[in-house]
Length: 343
Image (cartoon, rainbow, N blue to C red):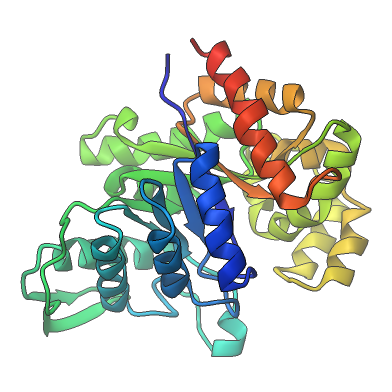
């Protein structure tokens, strides 16, 4: 049977008390990873992951994702190594190009694939505990070192991207690739081919790269109600994933594509609700996991058979029981079916 792991992606929108409680339940339900988004301007990610570490025993704790712009990569190396020490070797670092808060912070998101490449390079060097001089085009670090020795020089680093260059960087340098909105076989095939281009450059096998499908998810006894519940969350991520979706064969009407690009990335509920009504079901299905446990299980099986190793769900509230309802149903009703099918 193919080994398939599961993760949960959370924003920093839960109180400390609620996050600690949910972390304990996620471990009890059998999830392998808790991933937190480094999203401006929500609760701070490393203190939140430390809270999760102190309230769990075995679950892996991931940053999904941080970027090379809003925090210097050397400070990221310092933070993730500290979390790894606190959690006794359970930290995982996810790197992406970022988007949230850049306008407010006055950040210019230049040459993202190169910036991610250099971020990985500097962090890997610093994790050895040695003094480093790193003079990249996007990232510089002048003859410095961490003032402690990280407990793991080989702490896993994942690159999150839906762009051709970013996915190639993941294949070339990273332990894993996090791919958003790849709920159909064609999108997995498209992403995997790009990752394979990177592994080929590095003389690696694509099987060495942990392929993670990051998918908005809602599970309900009413499949259409689940699809409706996930619409807003899925539409939020669409502007940044249109090129990926269309390259993988997703059909998007030109007027809708133009409106989505004009909308950009937002947490404005009224803007998202209006746009969600315009997005047809076939796009929601191509980008997310929603439906009854049986429907969701079959869609997971299909993408796992195309090469996905981890299903990373960003939960939307189910009609029956909020995000807990979705998360418990996915762990206890969807994944047992998936694992039986893959035996």
